[in-house]
Length: 304
Image 1 (cartoon, helix red, strand yellow):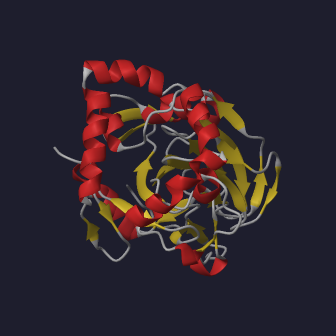
Image 2 (cartoon, rainbow, N blue to C red):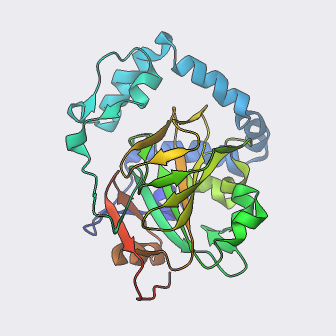
């Protein structure tokens, strides 16, 4: 099997399937050396340590990194007219650039469940034993949040995986209004969130991550987990315990790919059928910040 998109192909909300650009195959080959060879895995033990990403993050936040911006924009065909790009003095300034409101419409319908970020989305049932599988790796909610009593509250619910690539907008918002708890940080290592890593490592229970319990107005209690990835030195959440509003910016990732995981309790959400179908077929669905991806649960049953 060759290339990330042979493992997790992408599809948009109109049903268009995206073939991988040639440049991704060379990236995949490099990751295969890291994850599938003995020498690569020896090097990986060092590369995935948080201090490595933190050191890289310091460079990316310095003016020395500014020359990297223009080649990245050209290579990835980024439309800069969608963003505020004044006062960009480093690569991380550019990577965390703010998007213009006109470029991302927030669905403010109270019953609409919105995506918190630009990403590639997959949706899974949380089984009665709290174990579910993501691309060949088994996970329990406890693995992710290290809190057994909280994990039990989500048995029978839904797990939404939003995987961000380096070309995605790396700020994220609240999907509803409500009250949040303090952030809980779990220090770990920093594997790539490229699916190549899933074959050998349970990435979502090993990577550095931060989570909070959200008491939402329309979707009950939910947990949002931000998961760091290789070369992501920092998860930057803006708030501790506070009230929040739908569409309000919650935080951002610094340089690199990363993931947001949302956990919902049983009978709280109903995911849009195209996303459910796409996950069944082995596709990740391309979604955008603020876009409707589901609704508040009704009496209609849904099995993923």
